[in-house]
Length: 104
Image (cartoon, rainbow, N blue to C red; front, side, top):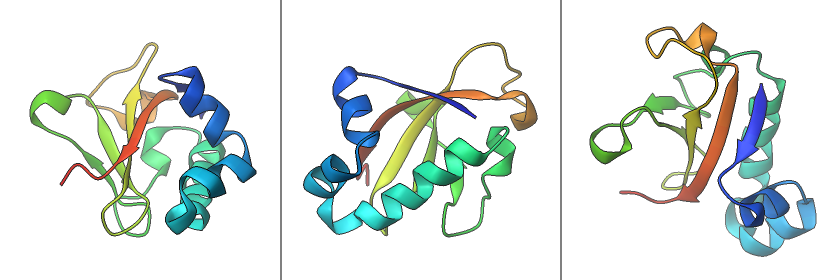
């Protein structure tokens, strides 16, 4: 899957293993695993709804965004970009990583 980033800072951190360890020390291994899974996927449907990645659609002010579990509380917040059908995850082939956060 093609991945873009919401900011240059997020891109710089998530494309450098040393910076991932620096900024996300407690979840660095899991975060690298989720990023590898996202890069290897052909479409969003390839990311399972079951743990550990546990892809799930978000609601409210995060409509048309998904969370991908990194740890018990931390989530990768992603949004589809490009041409896609929001009701068909097989058509979502490009995403933007918006943030890594605990939105609970």
